[in-house]
Image (cartoon, rainbow, N blue to C red; front, top):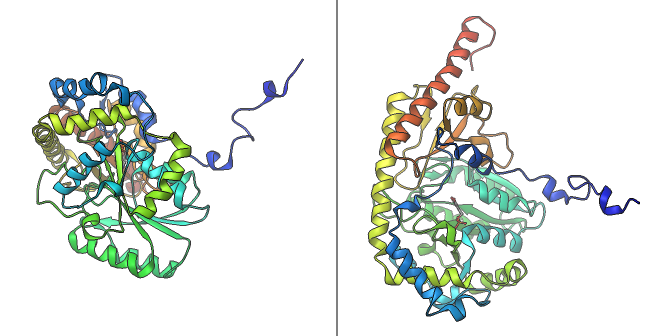
Length: 421
Ligand SMILES: Cc1ncc(COP(=O)(O)O)c(C=O)c1O
């Protein structure tokens, strides 16, 4: 006897339309290849948690296992523990933002916050603005709600305000379909660039003028290796929705982040979060609280900063030494990433298998654009995870792969088989 569920095609027509449009994250796909020890990975944005002192982890988890286990193992409130919110308010004060616990919601990493915000605000066809390229996890989160994501290019000073203004003029002031602008102003993922203060100010003026919300995603702000602190957008306007996370300054495995937003915005997000997970992990919140109150976390952060600075320097020096003159790249003052742009005829997606053969991975650029076609001649390379020696070797290998492509192009050009770009 056949039953209906036996003939159900799990990959076919029953899948929701929005899911059929989703693309797998290139980074996730690369994790499998990166686990091969012969391959040096410049692809993932994983913090080096081996730098965390074991004693601090023990201190932080002790409370959750022992003193506070009755609450740590129980359901909590949807918006998170009051004590954890106070810890995050203290962290915000350090960077120039005066946040009150009533304006804070704890989330399961910044990733959940991105999903909740899109779920709360976006109808299919609504407009969302973002840097182009932008964080691919944000593209994945937003795309489930089918927005029209429009990308604004950046240069070395962050998002181009002239191009943003031109796009806003096309959209029109007060357009109800324009929902929010998503930005990573510090050491952008994947660009590595930082939005300068004058542009931050201009962005907020434009948000008032055209009527859109600004969502500021700041996972890397405390990982600065050169230059001075730049005030977050949230310090300049209470209306900004700020996303924080412990992932890059403590541990991503704890899946703990936070939103700072006006109360009326949080109230709506709270309704949505109830349907998503009821509440985040109280256990992890207790661990995070104790990490930031009972351990020398600033000292550990300093170790992170010094280690990543050395790795960044190793990458920039190797790029200078090995990469061809046709390539350009960003010079990040912090964070994890360098963005490389190659001549237009190089497709970094199809080049990846040659790179893997040589024992190096990177993330092809097109995954960081919503159309999946822009950025084909670019790539993101991460310096957060490998040793300086491995980074230098990986860049040398990558340069050889690129050189092969350029050599092929030059040969075709000389033979008259193609026209110059
Ligand atoms: C810009 C950006 N936003 C959000 C996230 C997600 O962070 P979390 O681990 O807190 O979910 C990442 C992670 O790499 C990121 O780079």
